[in-house]
Amino acid sequence: MRLATIRTSQGDTRAVRVEGETLVDLGLADVGELLARPDRAERAARAGEPVAASGFAPVVPNPGKIVCVGLNYRNHILEMGRELPRHPTLFAKYPEALVGAYDEIRLPPESDQVDWEAELAVVIGTRVRRADEAEAAAAIAGFAVFNDVTMRDWQYRSPMWLQGKTWEASTPFGPYLVTPDELEGGVRPSLTLTGWVDGEQVQQADTADLVFDPVDLVRYVSAILTLNPGDVIASGTPGGVGHARKPARYLADGSVLATEITGLGRSEVKAVAEAVAR
Image 1 (cartoon, one colour):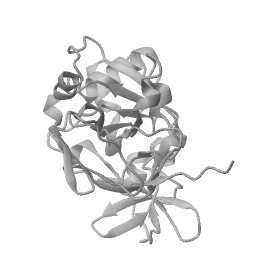
Image 2 (cartoon, helix red, strand yellow):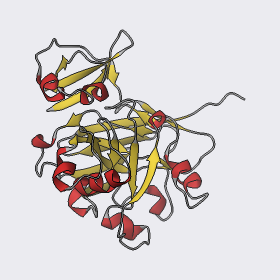
Image 3 (tube, helix red, strand yellow):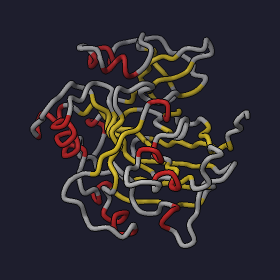
């Protein structure tokens, strides 16, 4: 099943089931609201009227938590000159960073090192704390395309990465959530991530290269705090980021950043220099 949050011409958002070219209205404001319902499976499968979209919002527009994982693909860890970790490296992102799959992302005037990071997002569907493996697997509602766009000059101002990772309107998320039963490997899906900048392929990897897979991550994060429906875990990026290139390469005004994951669709956003009134 594919689920999305769309924008309508009336200026609101709606949760929909995606059936080919048809969007079926589920009678709720967004996918986050759907996941919070105890009858979410039945509600997601319900009959409904087709609805037209003026655009796609982030899959979950206002998640309670966005937990991101750094250095989780073996090839990316090696290109950054680091050793394989014993434990996941975690940092946070806030909902203000999210945009829809076909929106613009902002290039802030404060940074001239805006980089790309194609990622698989894990979306939580069941409240879980200190999950064992079975509980962690059952807590995964599905997966979506994500790009953890990063301001490298701000990221490396200190050992703490947050300030480079959560700039407003920087992070495409979607177009839709796909449930594990639709994917080879289920909650440990076998997927290929690909990223492009201005039509040039810059990243490609298979999720088999993950050091910590989605179930591992739900177990680990839920040991720290409760995960709730609609929370998001961004599982890390493979090699090919601009900062690791020689010379380094970054997004510029007008750059088109595309991210695709097999079975999960494609996002394509334009980077636009943000004008700030003084």
